[in-house]
Length: 182
Ligand SMILES: Cc1cc2nc3c(=O)[nH]c(=O)nc-3n(C[C@H](O)[C@H](O)[C@H](O)COP(=O)(O)O)c2cc1C
Image (cartoon, rainbow, N blue to C red; front, side):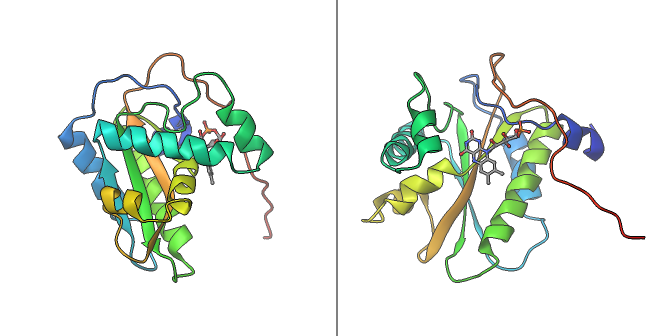
């Protein structure tokens, strides 16, 4: 699949098969995450440990429930809703809290990985909700278990897996507005 096709085909997948992705495919996706436009350090933490994925999922759900944010509270109240959608792989993108470009650096790495995953016929989704679990992680235990370096903040996450059939994606539509000055 060429790049333009992958860009057109990409969509957020929110239902996954249990089967893990192969290490070969994962390595290609990580490579893509290591060559985005960049202005500073960031860490790519690959989580495939089922117990840790469940812990992260459950802490993110708790954080959504207690967020006071109407949208997040209504999402998490949907029966069966899981912030990580039971994906077999979650990748956390963290970066130094003090770098004003950390959010951009991690988002660009995430998008590279998402497009690579699409080109490799995997489902993926860009997530912010797991960051809430780390924001509430006062002891630093979760960050330690996930291998987040000292002084780094988790800015976003990408989940990966083989897409299940019942995914509930947003309709394809053009986003953003455009103007030309010639
Ligand atoms: C900043 C940002 C945060 C997002 N956080 C989440 C999230 O926590 N959970 C989720 O299911 N989707 C999340 N998404 C995915 C969007 O919901 C999705 O991209 C949007 O609905 C468009 O659908 P598409 O990706 O299928 O084109 C996020 C997207 C962005 C850009």
